[in-house]
Figure 1 (cartoon, each protein chain N blue to C red):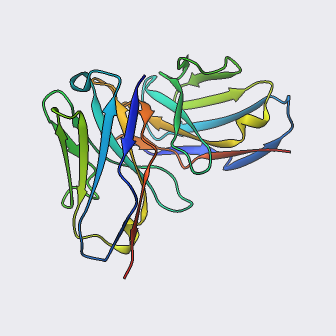
Figure 2: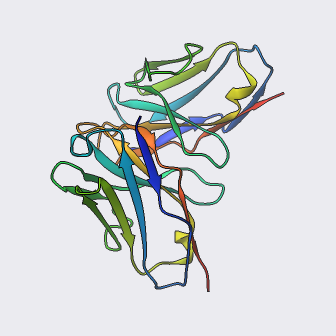
Length: 107
Length: 119
C-alpha cells in the first residue's frame, strides 16, 4: 500500500495569514492526489483533486501544487471558517490511502 | 442536488453484525460507485472498500475483506455495507461517499453513521 505522510500534524495561525502544509507519498502517484477538509462532527469535503484542481464551489484562497512525491496545500488569507483538519488521499492505486491529517487552528 | 443519506446509529455486541445504508439522490446512481470510509474516535480516515453502481463490482481493504460485504440496490439507488463478527475496534463513524467511476475521488459524502461495539 502507498503510505501518505502529512506534516505538520497541527498548526496555528492568525486570520489573514498564509499557511501551507504538505503530504508526501511513499512512491510516485503522478498527480493523483486529493485534499479534503473535515470539521468536527462532519463528513470530509473535497477541496482539491488531481493535486491542483479546485473542486467546484471551493474558494480560490485554497490551492494545491506538487513536486515529485510531495504535495502542498496552501490557504491564503486564512479565515476562521478554515479551522478544520485537512487530509490528503492518493487515488493512484488500490487501495486508496489517506494521510493522518493536519489540524489547522485559528489564533 | 446530490445527496447521500445514511441510516441511524447502531450499538452492537462483539461478534454481531451491522448493516449501514446509504440512500442516494440527485444523480445517476449507475454512473458512479460508492465507497465506504470509517473514522475511529480521534483518528484518521480508513478506506474499507467500494462498490460500483454500474455493475456491482466490489473491492475491499485487506484488513476487513473477510468481514465486510458491500451491495447496491439500483431500484432504490441505495448502497449497503454489512460488517460481520464485530470487534471493539470497529467502533467508529462510518461514511459512504460517491466515487468517481474511473478514479477513487470522493466528491459527495453521507453524514456518517456511528457504530458502537460494546458489551
